[in-house]
Length: 130
Image (cartoon, rainbow, N blue to C red; front, side, top):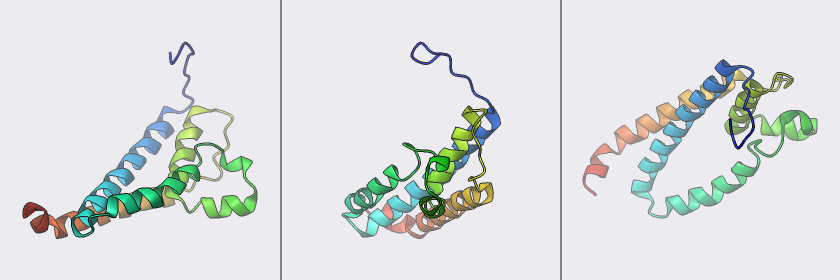
């Protein structure tokens, strides 16, 4: 139960896979940010300012099906939008997940993780000398 209401999950596999891919993407993004922060002192403020609008267009407040096709076409390029839709499709049996591109979502997560690992490896010596 969650706040007095039963929480039914339609497809636990989709919920877990969406969350796992989101975690992989987030770890890669965090590693990349920590590596970039070594070179740019104000990176955290710049990233926060750029990232804030992405939060609102990530699909948390609306579904892909409720958007006009023109907006949906552009928002589908946002990996966070894909992850939110993926997790949402696992919670509701009536939810149509025709707008999720699983390969794109996984590829974004793996690429971000590889970028994060590469930047962390590249900045390892500079981080030790801080």
